[in-house]
Image (tube, rainbow, N blue to C red):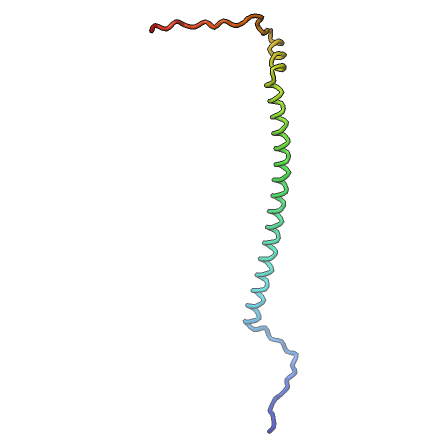
Length: 102
């Protein structure tokens, strides 16, 4: 039984259509990977800037609330009215009611 296996050791390399499709597939995967990594970086960057803006807006909100509470206090209101010449009455205020024809 003689085996007719021929060992052909050729260094000739031919590019077939299968190899071309395989290489195109690998290049497509590489491009998809690059695109998704850039997109992820941009999303992370947007999230970080949004977090910074949120911190700044929260600080501004707290500042404005404290100013409003300060301006609403009775003592501050009396000071602002005194600057305009309005004084607190010394006696009780009498309400004048309009007579109704009942």
